[in-house]
Image (cartoon, rainbow, N blue to C red):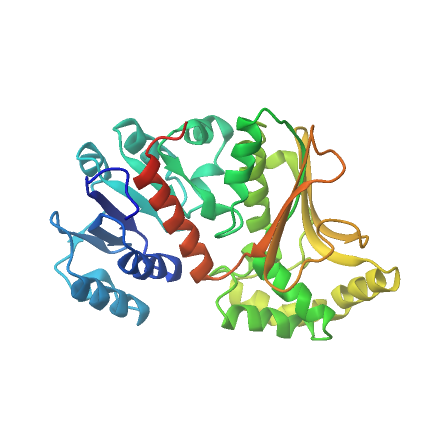
Length: 354
């Protein structure tokens, strides 16, 4: 059985969107000594100190999938989950929201001795002064924020622990944009590829987060800060995958994506003509980063990107020319939730990072 001791870990899940619901389902299927004691959404929360019965959890997840709330099934308490009180009791929190302004709350929870597992990237992307302590917290895990379920950040930590130093990180870390790019290479129109990504659940709730490069920029910031570089958002030069339309709402923007079809497709054809591959790349150094479509030669670590894959290449002092590379599925609630689950299991087994 995967556990550090016979002690049961109490777990509270904040956010029951696609990733949160999928994580809870996966949690119910693994042989780990955890007790699900709280579930929270925007409307309120429910708490069961002895742990919820699986049947109750399944009813709550079903209601959420149908657009309902936790309160539709259980007697929910309005307002925010009492994180600090629960942290003092040793609860471990999973943040599966997309909420801003959470860094101070999770820092307080960690200071109280709780564990925190993040699928939410935003706490790690606030001003460096506000989020720096999170990166150093021994009971914080955030693997799923970059590369979904891939061991990207754990590999970065291993490189540091073995005395290597990072020179540059090249990364294609949007499964959504990888999927869209793959469809365009196959001859599909950009607008249809975007529609398919949304229908399949690959895209962020607001697809502009992907298409304007915002989601990749956050992941690049997390990668850079995890490498030890105190980067700020302003240090990243971001060129959107799809230009224009920033003043429009999400639904209006989607209607205008078709206007970008010809221009984007021309860029892909030009790269093919040169024998290269067009990828949406983040290239990050200690001094900052550049994010945007890049035409890469066949020998580039990102050239073999396929579909919704993520690929990350660490150029290090020991490996300056042949980087340490990681590749695999990088989009969708299943793989992202699996990354969260792996973090929770690691926290249950190992406790504080060494």
